[in-house]
Length: 183
Image 1: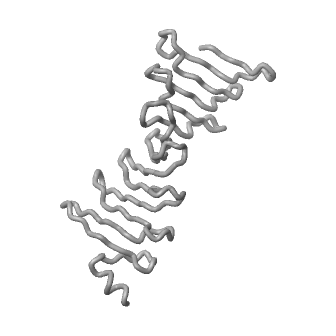
Image 2: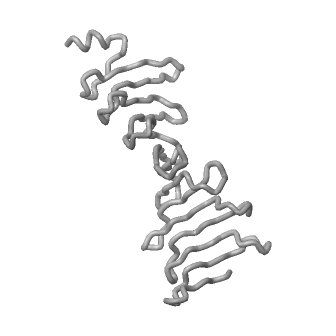
Image 3: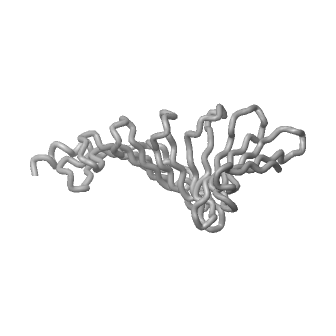
């Protein structure tokens, strides 16, 4: 392990480490004295960071960044519970650092997701899962901040289309929407 210190303050600022002993630094810890702030890991030693670990002032891991394309560009961040299980995954689908999709997990199973599908900075797509199965997808096509169209997937594979004509969170089958609009 090779330490680097701030020349003016004398505080530890970097720890470089060769985790597999092959002579190549593959782990760099960014330090604030004795406190770890961030760790960057290049596990496959291709010169590109594969994993970023961020630590809070309480010295606990806050989130883990990953490069989904394996190119050293951080584009997704996972958050865990006290037991270390992933509870949330934030994704920059355009790989520009802006989070556009958030997935929620329970016991390692995806239960829901929301997404800014059109890139305007507002959530406009919601997915709900039932076990391993996508059970519904809702869309905000009116840009009012709530879904107005919904696809509901039955276990047998059939799909039902529903609409919320009035913006009151009351969905009706799309086939009956005209009658509902007259009421």
